Image (cartoon, rainbow, N blue to C red; front, side):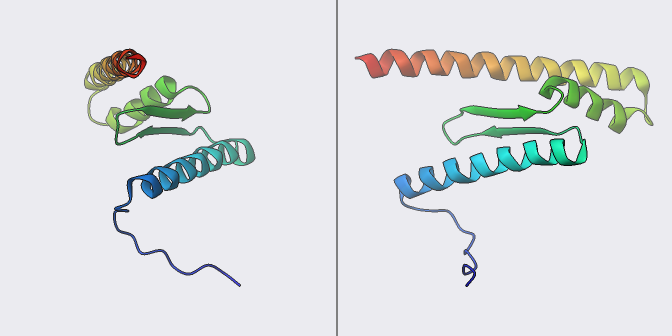
Amino acid sequence: MGRGRVELKRIENKINRQVTFSKRRNGLLKKAYELSVLCDAEVALIIFSSRGKLYEFGSAGTTKTLERYQHCCYNAQDSNGALSETQSWYQEMSKLKAKFEALQRTQRSTSRL
């Protein structure tokens, strides 16, 4: 017998919400990997948790896929704009990674106290 339909609303219980996030995140990452292998597709998946933690999957590398996406989206408009847009995406991703690493260091240092 199948499962019932899940009501889509925010889970109020913090522990249940974290467990659901972890399970669904792992499921998404697994599906992204399976899609890339089975269909020979280039897949990129970026997830930020509510605490700001970054999870990513890229079958050809997340940065490369983002650059390809930018090239496809902005190629028809202006090739120069696409290049600068790709660079800004790359810069933003680099800033977010640096911010994430700083948050991790802060969290580690406060958890040691």
